[in-house]
Length: 245
Picture 1 (cartoon, one colour):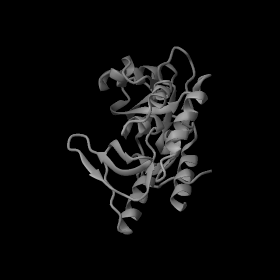
Picture 2: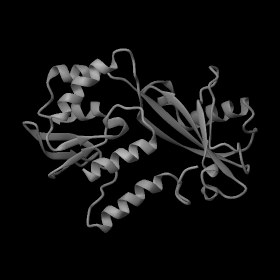
Picture 3: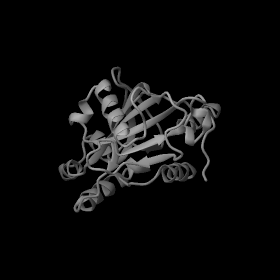
Picture 4: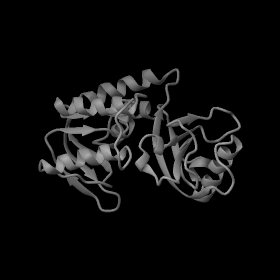
């Protein structure tokens, strides 16, 4: 058993934190990716952010949950060459999420189902109605079909229609859905999903963490900030721990 938001899906946790921050007088800036971390020596003095219009913000303490590799690459002045070389040696797997709206009451009684067969492209589905019945109308459901890939590969570049057809075909082939049940879909892409623990990852990761750890007023945490394959509950606990600190 576990706690799950009645409405709004798991994203309601983040929205709840945002509301509390704003109620306390803080400011939340969504859709504002950090692109450069300005430093003087080993002290961070400002963050440059924004997709099209660049802005900077200054603070006393900084908490980073972006990939530790992206953090190291974003430093200005730049990190030493050996650190940047180590960054290039660490690999992440990306994920494409295909959300299928379905004209049926349920697909499975399970919250998630793994699909390990080699001939399938989808490797796991989640059915949100099994986390909270309020996530979909009573006579409809939605599943998220996960497809792992590499950023820039054929799956990553595929169109929404192509991805919908791939997910529909796979789920039909294993008997989870029937033809004509898909009412529509939408797509989300996550470039940094799973850190890859190859045989040499630790020797590349250690100098990066040691260097970033010397930044006296920046704290790198979370799944990506630590290059650690932990679960969502662990990541939330890490965020609460650094907040208390």
